[in-house]
Image 1 (cartoon, rainbow, N blue to C red):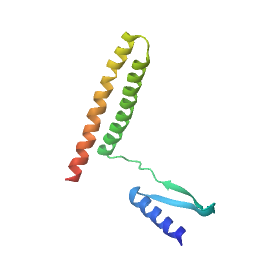
Image 2: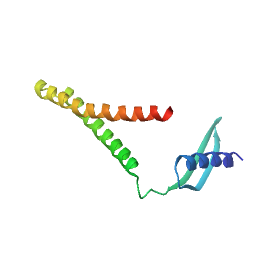
Image 3: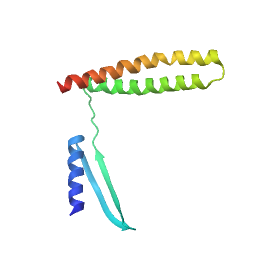
Image 4: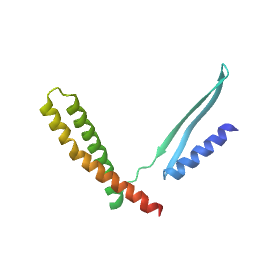
Length: 120
């Protein structure tokens, strides 16, 4: 009974969170060992990818990619600049790390404003 309830909950969350998805090869096992219960759940999830993205979705995807790349550059340049023993080169790298930091701030502000506008 517990297996069916958990599968129903997981399927509901999956279908409402990701369109055109399916849950197959469901495996559920509960074992007791030294007074502790071990829950073993395995499943295969198939997701149909969306072939055609709208311009809004494409722009959002590109912004997320830009955010991740700029964040990695910012952290990388700043960290390497702080670790380097050469003070001049280190300061230059930390200073160059502010350029991707500015991009990260712009993109994250855009996401926060979008979320705020959707809530109102």
